[in-house]
Length: 483
Ligand SMILES: Cc1ncc(COP(=O)(O)O)c(C=O)c1O
Image (cartoon, rainbow, N blue to C red; front, side, top):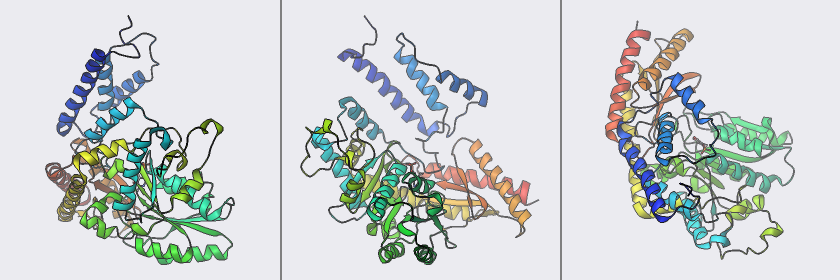
């Protein structure tokens, strides 16, 4: 008999499931001691990558050794699930979301049309409504859909705005955002058929927020030139610095100018669960549509995004479709078909991996974890601000602190030397493999960022990070800039 039939019996399922579960539990327990980045040499990495490009065999393999191969691949990577991941916008990967997903993939219910799995569609809708109403503060009747991530959410928002405001004539439509918006905004506009040179980057103020007066001036000038401004995109937590645009002012501007107001809250949105976050993110509730990423600040596995909208009919109108092969499938009593709210038809019940952790842990567990990130961020900001030779130019709105080596004087050559030293500082800090930081460019200066999002990052790792950055900054300054 075939050792691994496509339909294993109970004993085989139990054995295989046990092997996978043991691996995952082992790996999860080891996360605090695992290196934050791969320890493999370049040559070893190249060899491993090459080995994974091989096609599958005709004959069966062995689960234990295949899992061993997966572990090799998982180790040849940034440890994005671990407590030391402080680069870009960290992901988490809740264990209970993975459990939910295992169940989900095994029962394999259809997620595109509500009538095919109506209770699961309702479960997913409950998650969407929680995000729209409870988290974002949109009015009752608002809704949306779960997506594979922030980029897809923003894409559908732009398509809905375009369809609602421009109809079929896209040629003169213009969009307004800033240079600090995530590039997925401009990408979504281009994919939605908006001309590249009709995507306006509104100037920002010294604190890196969109300047509403500058936005108003650009909109007026474009209208006078015969263009059709239709979409204003604010960011609630920029990727670079976690900065929140002046949302209430932008909402007022969008209303006055009759523009669709979208907020990219992929990073910041779920901080509205916290007291500080709710204050700082006031104005989100005035948006027409909002992108959020549960795979960022709700600690979900990658591939979990969300779009919520005030007017579900507008989202539906932009994404609707039908075929005679679907004629037997009716509506499902008040629960929308997610396949008609976004570009995808067939997909998994995405809400399950959010619903189970929310119901199991309770919303307060998520609130507390995010409050902890805000506390830790304040501590890191204060500690790095005290390190001689470091420049910490912004007070964080959310959970990102930016810093760089301070130039010796105001000359361009001192700025260049400081940039070079900051680059070295990043290499030195990351070389310890206890934390991983990333860099960006702010106002032309090479800048490091530390971003606290993972539910596994706690005080101990942040104290370690603080000490490591302080020691390496001191070393870098004394070698490079101070001399
Ligand atoms: C503010 C912001 N918006 C959008 C995105 C894109 O989201 P995704 O990578 O989930 O497509 C990101 C990703 O980091 C982000 O930080």
